[in-house]
Image 1 (cartoon, helix red, strand yellow):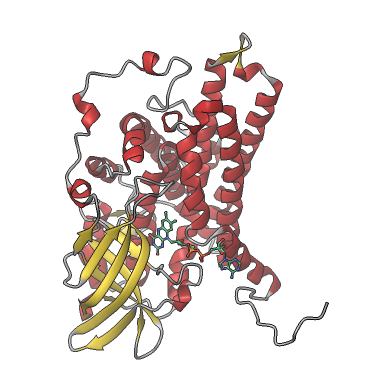
Image 2 (cartoon, rainbow, N blue to C red):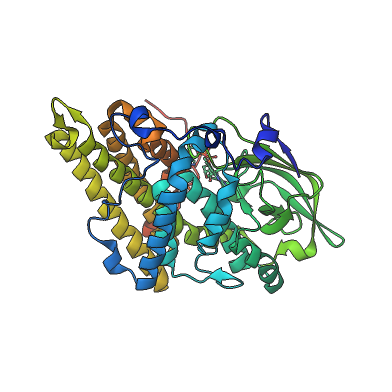
Length: 439
Ligand SMILES: Cc1cc2nc3c(=O)[nH]c(=O)nc-3n(C[C@H](O)[C@H](O)[C@H](O)COP(=O)(O)OP(=O)(O)OC[C@H]3O[C@@H](n4cnc5c(N)ncnc54)[C@H](O)[C@@H]3O)c2cc1C
């Protein structure tokens, strides 16, 4: 694979030792006299209705394990990487050691968690850093899940164990430059040749693609005109990935434009269970449950940060927390977080009981991101000027929420998916009027 970028070399080096590790330790009280920054992450006070009571002891243990690791290992470094739009490759083994990759997948070296356990783990990652949770969910809930749900036995045995340990990283490529919300119309082609397939076309926005070892690709079979799935290796001749620059959110996630020029995929790497867009949709419906927990975790982190900040910073001789308007905003945020958690939890239970529909998943993802947006905006206000400084977490989370609102189906598209389910009418495609309108 060719990786193109103006900062190509920088992106590929093992930047395990960022520059500031070589500097003397920062005296945080001097750098941030007003309040404690997010590098020392605030305690979790956002779980007001005590979700733990609804979790099994195993789920509670995963939650605490992930929280502890994120606060200790990730919180001190993420702002710097976010600011530089770099990926902290040295943390990958730490995420692997949490034993959460592969989530609900049973066997093949995967943890076989309950969906609730898998989702609360994703939320704990997002509470501290949403880029990190996006990297993880693309790898685990999209790429690994596609192989687990649609792959052959041989593919599961070959790929899932190293993906579960994060020894091998995957990406998942559906979106194309001309087909975002309208992904089912995608134009990348797969043509059958002796011993395999030839892929031709383009993908856009693909998270992890600049360094992924395996690329799960969706392309249109030129014989059947249906969407099929393929596993492409990063060194496949004809594959080029260009890093997308200048994102204002999820800056640590490395999104790429992918170009396929006569890329050969052997027969053994065609994913046999992806035979139409409906098969892709099955993966997306499950993945949307996990994605819905990202804004939950993110909103919890925002609330936790605001709660500490308002108690630490004083104006007019009193803590910000003592002003009625600030308390009103804080409690509005707290109420949102409790409702979001309960909707996310119920979605997991519907899934576990085999009752979850595609419309349920879409409503969960769209409504939770909507409430998270309101929560992030209130949090940003509460921190005043520091609400636009990434060091105090809220500005970073505010920006990270924007792509989450948009990916895996925008708010609008997910609402229309639920709308179709509850009304029986699909309203995605406008019908051109044939009559001239009269005033
Ligand atoms: C940071 C980031 C990471 C991503 N990672 C991945 C990845 O790893 N893999 C992958 O395959 N894709 C990925 N995506 C792509 C993502 O899924 C798409 O951006 C998303 O589906 C929206 O498509 P679009 O950006 O082309 O917007 P468009 O489809 O161009 O939509 C623009 C606007 O029009 C609205 N709209 C479109 N159609 C309709 C309609 N019928 N009715 C009403 N409103 C409509 C939308 O809601 C939106 O507001 C990522 C995107 C981002 C931003």
